Length: 126
Image (spheres, rainbow, N blue to C red):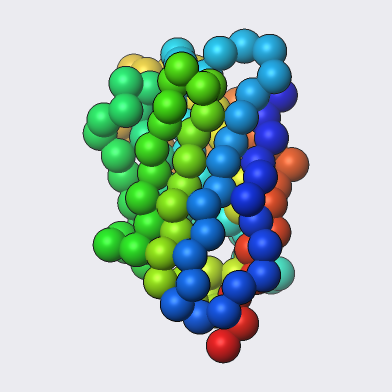
C-alpha cells in the first residue's frame, strides 16, 4: 500500500516536497514513478527513479524544476517541486514498478506500474 503526502495549495514560484511511503513491502526493490492527473486529461508521467537511485527520468515540462529521490532506509520516495506553475496543478500519484527489465524503456507508461497510491492534491495559483 502506497501513500502520498506533502500536497497543498501554493503560489506560483513556490516549492513543495511530496513523499511516498509504503506500509508492508519495502520499496527498496521497486522502481518508482510519479504521475499527475488533471481534469480532462489522463494520468501523465512526471518523474521516475530506478530502485538503486539512478538513473532518474523527468518529463520535459518539469525538467530542471523537479527532483526525484529516494531514501531506502526510510522506505520513502520524494518529489521535490520547485518553481511551481499553475499548470503543475493536479493530483499527484506515486507508483511502484516491480520489473527492472522493462523499466528503462517503459518508465513513462502507467501500465508499467502495478501499485498506486491514492494521490495528493497540488494546487498552484497565480
